[in-house]
Image 1 (cartoon, rainbow, N blue to C red):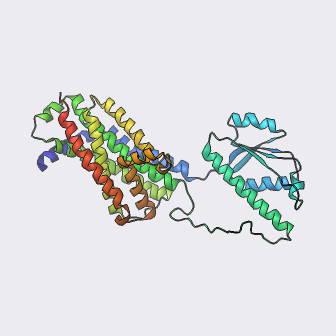
Image 2 (image 1 turned 180 degrees about the vertical axis):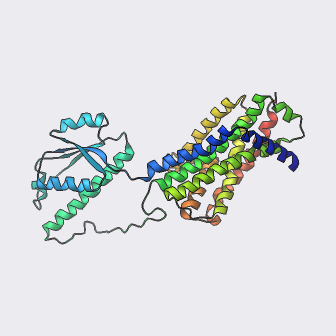
Image 3 (image 1 turned 45 degrees about the vertical axis):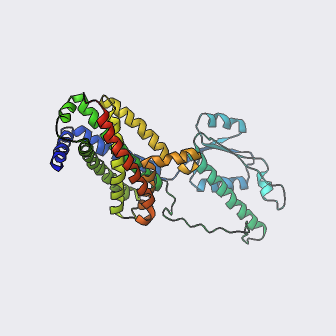
Amino acid sequence: MMYRMWTLILKELIHLARNPALVFLVTLGPLSEMSMVAWSTAAPIEHLPTAVVDLDRSQESRALLAALHNTETFDFRHYLDSVDETKPLVEQGRVVGALIIPAGYGDKVSTPLGETPALSFTLDGSDPVAAQAALAAVEGTVLSQSQKILAEWVGGHPLAMSLIQPRLRVRFNEELKKSVYTVPSELGLILFAIGLMLASMSIARERELGTLEQLAVTPIRRFELIVAKAIPAVLLSYVSFIMMLLVAMIAFDVPMRGSWLLLLGSSTIFLFVELSIGLMISAVSSNQLQALLAAFMWVMVEFLFSGYGVPVENMPLILQKTANIFPIYHYMIIFRAILLKGVGFDTVWPQMLAGLVIGAVVIPTAVWFLGRQKWE
């Protein structure tokens, strides 16, 4: 059995060696994509184009604008004279928001126990990421300015604005970098996508080239065929995965706090499960293009349940339950926990058990699918 499997594995490796363009795309393509994602998400959101309508033009309004400018979140590109002028700028996407400082703002903030001044800030909600960053910067700056003004009213003594003073402590991502979340998520998704697409084309390629009949008359068993087809895809996927992980750690400061052995071992389990799904897709596809399109559709479904775009916990209950049947849902929990938190087997064993259970269903199903398909 081992000799038959090794012969078929060698055949697959020779086929990959004769197709250097595929190897190049599978290794450097995902590496380039991951690097661009990490590069674009590593930097904080700064210098958002913003419009200002200062109807007060007082020392206090200028102090507020200076405080907002010092956050480096805003880039005041348009100083307007009327509120109506802000509407086309927001609608055309030329600014993320428009700040309106009403007339009399300076007098109100200078008068203790007087009328509370009101600021108006219009945000472009079509870009929620930028809008949330702008809103957080405005709220923080206004709170800081309010405390400063109150302190001046009471003779320079600081005031506690709340009966409860929170003490914030952030673990595992002290600077709250978005890239620390997005890069591992992108890594896990690319690992699964590469393995799935390589496996999905393997049987379809044999059928398309007319060599599947030759395999059918050999002593190779269906289980041996699945393993032999999966191992080269696993090796190529691992090469790409290790390259991406090293670049993420060295170039983008993504931490690796856990065990390499546990990470690679759990990745192997889930990758074989994913490859079995790819082989099922390949078995029912008449050519490589059809298999590739079907695999791409499956990747899009897995993207939904990976927690990358939308947290699974925020989904409706029925979708939360559905997520448990997708191997990527459990793998992403393991991957982030090992990479960012440094947890051990005692923490991730439920997810690994779920992966083994899914594999115990998927791999025999893939063998059955291959047996049910016509070899012609």
